[in-house]
Length: 278
Image 1: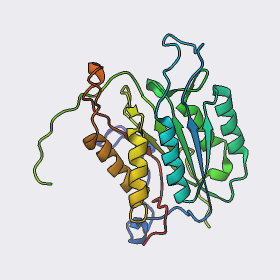
Image 2 (image 1 turned 180 degrees about the vertical axis):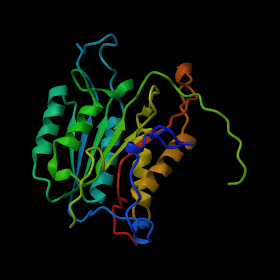
Image 3 (image 1 turned 30 degrees about the vertical axis):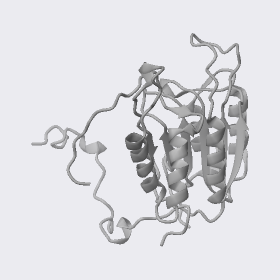
Image 4 (image 1 turned 120 degrees about the vertical axis):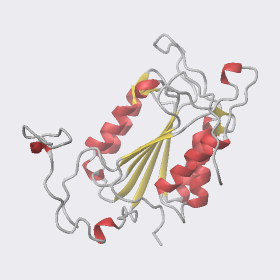
């Protein structure tokens, strides 16, 4: 029983919204809305292959990322097939990356429908990512897109990050299953989708043919973008990486027979399709 100005859940009455507006339960409000993708689409790729010898920190110079140019090729091909204007940047420093993003956010984006930023590098937990000369934080990139680019308000901002998020490796588990024109007042953090190659604290895999996440993402989008929206395709990407992939490096037993789970975080308010909905 509620008491002292609080309801039975323990939430003070003053913090509880009033009744839903009339029509909330109507059919129209339950139908999907789609982002307008009819104008320009822009993709930025920050690709890192090698790093400075005098890299700061206890771990020193991050190792060369063999196979990363295969990911750049796959993202460029897929992006251009979806009418994105793709701009790759290679081995940029911390200041160069933030400067590129500042300049991008200052551009006139009134004719921009969608932005996709891809970051291919090494990383650690807490969002730490390696530039050529020192680390930066993913939150810095997200914040610029959300808060420094007024022309992108209400438009989808996609981030795809191929980077480790820690040093742990996932040995996996066996699972037994049965069967086979209006003005909107929006919060600052909406309309953003972040797809990362692994969960927090865990590593990601890549070889000379590219990384598990990027190669699978491009494979799925190439095959399914005419039938599915982005969220549906990402679920398939996650399933394929988690179920089809297993590391093979018997010369390094601590990395052998390991698994990987991509992770998505989304505040999209509409459905995103790269082609017109049917």
